Length: 331
Image 1 (tube, one colour):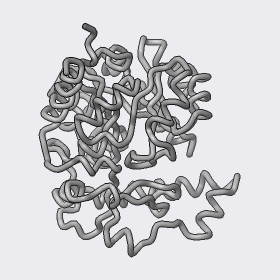
Image 2 (image 1 turned 135 degrees about the vertical axis):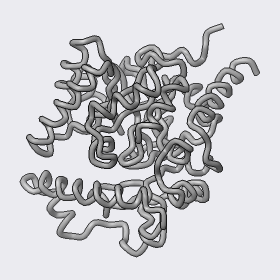
Image 3 (image 1 turned 60 degrees about the vertical axis):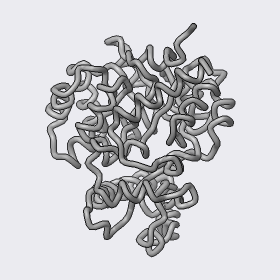
């Protein structure tokens, strides 16, 4: 009998369980990434998190992960061309990652062709975040090896469509598709594989883990939240971001101001405005994710909070999901 966990994702990434601990700003700390990979999944490094949030030299951050596990890890490359300086920095990070043995990359925003060309030259693999077919087709044209299909139940910048509809839209392009959004229980994992996804990417569930260095108020908020407590706010990055609907969020409001919206639509002003938002959100999320008092309560999370009821070790989560998938083939 074929192993349900032997999918295109697990083969592409060289992992035992087709489950990605998704890159999270600011929550992808060294210990969490390492724990996910050590347990048979794939921990993915978020470079800005390692360097700006945790103050590590990027290479030293990768070496710190390697001191915990020698299992494969991935890297997230945010490639929107917001500035030439940022582009050069991302190029440097990718070179360092390749030198340190990373061979699986997840690209987000922008056109990933230059990443694909560099990574495939050394035998690596690139999957790209998409929210609808037109972006998937552009990613296919850039030569990516797989798609991360971000649905409307995801945290962070969620897509507009449900998981099944999104798979129907992009599943005929000949690439493996990973389900990102709404995976909070072992049954959710089994359902995604049964739908035809090559694996899943999870973020919210991994914030409520022992290894994640997010504050206890943040983790507790995830445990206590229901699906209906997740709202989309424009106040963080200028485009809708999924967050827990706390009193702090309610006070700030959910919509960007009229001037900001106008500038984000302008051809000449949108990149400047996005850069301003990026700086603001980087500071805000770094401050709030680790605030042990819980005063600011600006916490990103997806609708998978409905299935999160305890803080657990990352390995226990991954192994429980794997056992559920295997059991589903024998029941």
